[in-house]
Image (cartoon, rainbow, N blue to C red; front, side, top):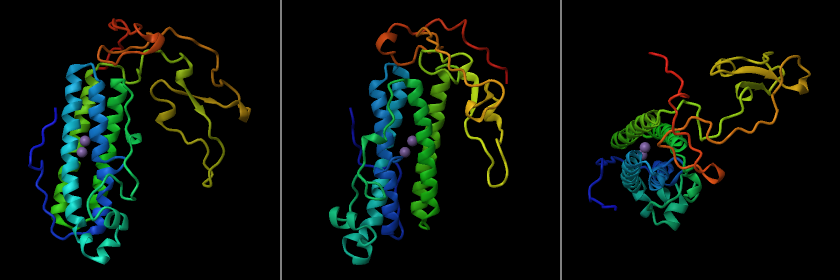
Length: 283
Ligand code: MN
Ligand code: MN
């Protein structure tokens, strides 16, 4: 059940309306990383979620994002107001001024219509929580950039509030993922192919303009990885293991809070993971 309260979550004060900035703010209204996208992503994930505790989390944050949408809408409306009467202001965004009468609608800063294609909803709770952590990071950086392009104190304060809440959400989603007690690279229920999963494939070779070749980093030797060469460069040594391997579904460590496996994997969920769970290093 939804209930609207005639009060903004954060009171918005705009000093000097800036129609061009109002147009930029549309990115957080009807854009890919905007508030409607966040509200819908978390709420629909919540509708799907069979884990009642984490469903509550998804509904809490999904609903808060709708309140953010309302705040952003109020900010945009104040900044766009001159478009209703001034030709110069209307030129900042003819689509908003002429088609929309200087009001907000569900478009991004370039006038592209909002789309459900923005949403990441997989039906696997652990995977969805990872998407949500990334979505909060994107929302945070968009707010940061908006803050950098306005000189209006009241606008900056409202954006600072909204930006801060995204970090709060990121913390909550991260805690929810950790509380599922899955090893960090355990996704779904089918185990990846042993050996192959450890191979970092050196697929980009040759020298850069600076004369460097094969710059190394932790990404090709950490988390159990080691480098293997492509046979197209006729290198010596180990190459990518392409031997067929068909593991039994239900071999990957999962969590009781995961969403239900589909198809032939129904009923294959691993529930006794006490033997499989790797010991955590004491910190
Ligand atoms: Mn938000
Ligand atoms: Mn958020």
